[in-house]
Amino acid sequence: MKNYYEILEVSPNSTQKEITFAYQKIKSAYSQNGLALYSLIGEGECSKMLELIDESYNILSSPVKRKRYDEVRGLNHADQDQGPAPTSISSLLNKHLEQQDGAPSSRPNNERKSPSSTKNIAKIIATKRFALSYDIDPEFEKEIEQTTEFTGEFLQRIREYKKIDILRLADMTKVSKVYLSNIEKEELEGLPALAYVRGFVYQYAKCLKLNPDLVATSYIYRLKKMKT
Image 1 (cartoon, rainbow, N blue to C red):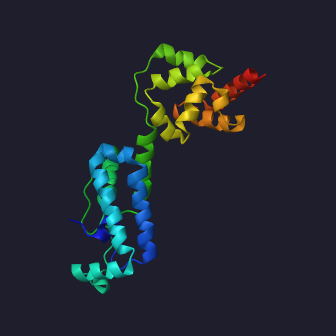
Image 2 (cartoon, rainbow, N blue to C red):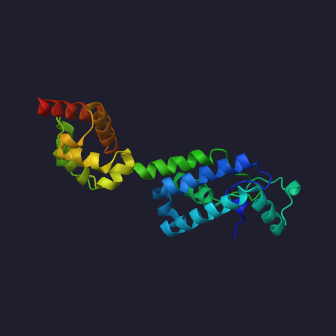
Image 3 (cartoon, one colour):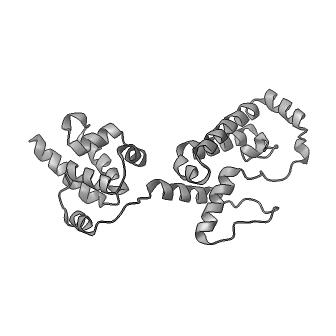
């Protein structure tokens, strides 16, 4: 089993500031971007890692607990000049990216982690998070392409056609599922000021790979006509 330093991807010589920064980075990667990770190691394994991450930080963030832990583990800070060992989040995601790019997944044991690994992780996460998987209907695609006035009902049809439920769209857009539902139903009473609605619809369209400017402009124009 990895020790607490390895779990947080830090060296035993790390300062408290470095440990806190490492904890925040790896905790964010596991908790906020589970979609990419679940596809690689499973939700259960992610949950276990989150517990270990919290447990590690609980010990290493306390000078007293950290000193006691180091003594029990026989860690001599003066002898630790090696870089941090990669944890499962870096090794799994970077291995996945290398396989996608056709690059060899194995590295020499003495080769330190590339500075670009954080960017690689972000690339995989973003790709997984915003990926759309659906069966293309040429007729409906043509209808979408030729449409200039986007109603709430039509947006809902597109969302369902592209197999994105409200909960996932809310995660993708960072817009409340209540607002998204009211946008589709054109429930004016349940929506904020039009300036905010435009931003919500813009993100809605962008995540569904539509023309966000066209969709947002036509939808807001429609709402304004409904209000008069």
